[in-house]
Length: 452
Image (cartoon, rainbow, N blue to C red; front, side, top):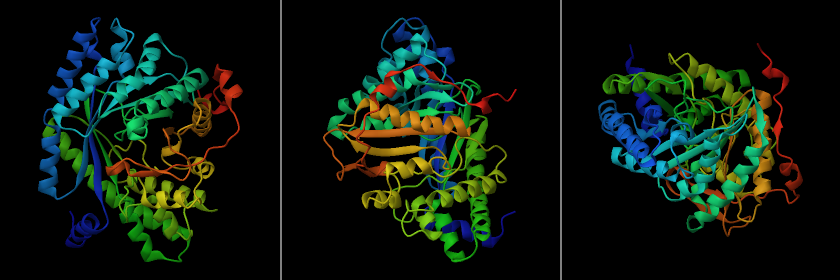
């Protein structure tokens, strides 16, 4: 039972410290929608999404009102479309994205994810078709998100797919040049992608999932920041314990919302993703947590160690608070979506190289980073390859969500608005990676893949 002190503490966290449930995401299997005729398949996709997720938004809003817990987004994830569309006789999967977009708008959700392909060991014709369709699909829709998994610890890295994704991102940026490449903010390139991630832009409904499922993502950087203010100057053991206890309280709220949404919708509860997902709002920043540990600015020496402690403590505290923890779970470091990261990058202290080092110990990877519009496709592919290698060798999920902002140069800022915030354009190394990317083939899986 909750006592009065715990209730008041939770109210303070919500009212003053930006505590929220970042998303309720309904995963929906679309495998039954496959059909040889594209129009029939797209109609099936629209009908199934609107039927299964009809009450998702209304249920989320009712839980918000009754429990007083902010639920920022209601979202849908679907089976990777390369699998659903493979039966259709077409060389363009953009109509599937457009059907997803219409269905998501009918349901009233904020985003829908799953215009995706899993190509860590090779590409089928359907996978190639989907990737070639990404620029049109994400530039002609508003709330559809896509992802491509190009590597895994078990399979290695598909460098042909990595090269193709560099060109795809450049094409998508050019097609959305009027919004400074906003389409690229809806596309993630993964290594070791997970099947139950509720967060966009990388959410998809894995083939190992059931027909429908409810996954919840919680967030509370502001709560952790305030908690650490009470232990200034104390040893890191105390810091870790403080973060663990705070993560427990945050995750319990997410568990409550997940179970309630599951019960009301009649959909099985999947997981709680206990990630610290920041926003551009002051006081809701992962960077400021790291600075509260004693760093003058996020990005200086010591930042990676501080982030490692934070990520580990969040997982340890949260895992005891939920019956099923999954997704990505940890600390996100999206540059454009975190007020402290924006400030550190704008000052030049936080660089792309330092961010790459931080991704070794964070929840995901290089997230919402703007680079000059004239950055080559090969350089983008090389950045993807570096990040995939970190994920592959460390048996963790890594990702790249990068925006080569058309017409922008280092020192400019790209405004996306809302939770996506604004991104300072960061420099990339001027040397060429063209010959490296041109080799193609597959980087073999590391020794730790041999676990059987």
